[in-house]
Length: 188
Image (cartoon, rainbow, N blue to C red; front, side, top):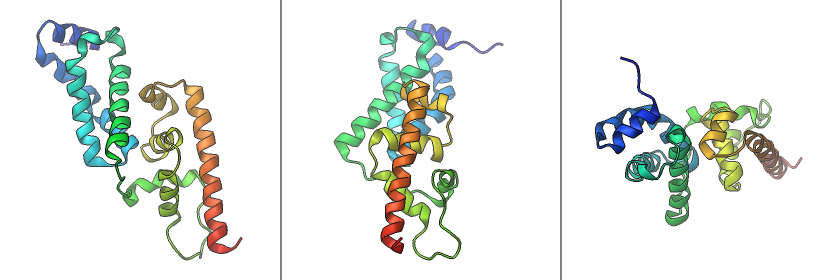
């Protein structure tokens, strides 16, 4: 049996077949979680937000104007819930596990061999957490979660060119902050 389109599933849910929402959840659950985790930097909080996003999407499904845009609409709900959570709960992000650091290496030049002290990645992630949201979120999604420009644009409902330019600017700011740290620590 061929897989049903999102629009077909949504029409069936709106007719009362609640079980037709499950395939939509299965299609988007990992991306919604990754988006929430990328925006919050907190796995348990991201799980709660992802569940809340699906619940809210189900409750407001009648408000969806174009069933073909379900994914973008769901990402918008997730994004708004994350922003609200950060504002209202003042979430303290958990430090990233070393496994997350592998993609961050190409953002800045790594510490020269033989230098002692705190891991450059740990310093960089601390600096990243202090950046404005519009850069921090994009840098996390690109270099920690490894999403493409197009995927980030879709998740954040931004034009791809804006994603590229903000990533460029975000990398520049992060590099400058890292250079300031190096200058302070090593007197360069």
